[in-house]
Length: 240
Image (cartoon, rainbow, N blue to C red; front, side, top):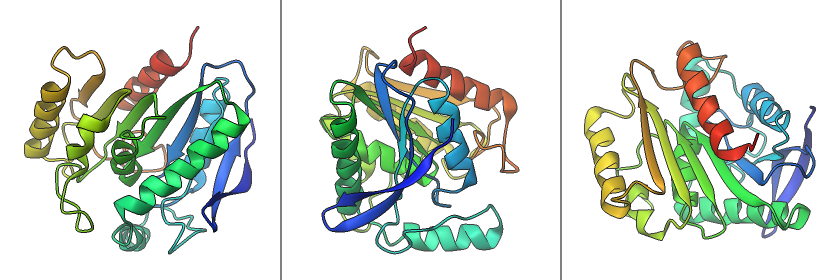
């Protein structure tokens, strides 16, 4: 199922986004938040893979103000450039841009539930966006830095958990140096604090998996771990 480039608007700011419409069969519609590398080939292909399961997908950029057309590979230079733009983001802008995505998909499918799926920095942003009341289910794949206060807010994304009204899934690997053991323990502790019965918050740690394990184009791709992540998405979002 082939996607297309569209512009959605966050205020007056056009956000060049990737839209894959798969119809009205699925209960959910999803907003995908990309890695530091932008809406690149892998994000577009993953969105199309989701849409092939009858899940409509809107992938929105996180660097709409500084690099609206960013589309990088996975070299060290690409990583350096992506991190440069990551460091220019603000929590306020992330909320504004995800809200613009929510409004756009709601116009298309007003009765659908909304899931947000983020990878890498997109996982960090997905945890922030999970605090929006319109989000029914969030999937934060290896979102690093969520326990560290952001420079633009002086609080950490994990401190927003009390505002999360939907389900929240955090998925990472035990071999991910960007999410060290101290951070993983803090995430589990905070999940337990705000959801002691484990009814809405789910922490999934995959033994031996590294950062980026879902992405076939990265050296850290892990087929078995990616299948665990994919099956979690299917279980939560696709009714068989």
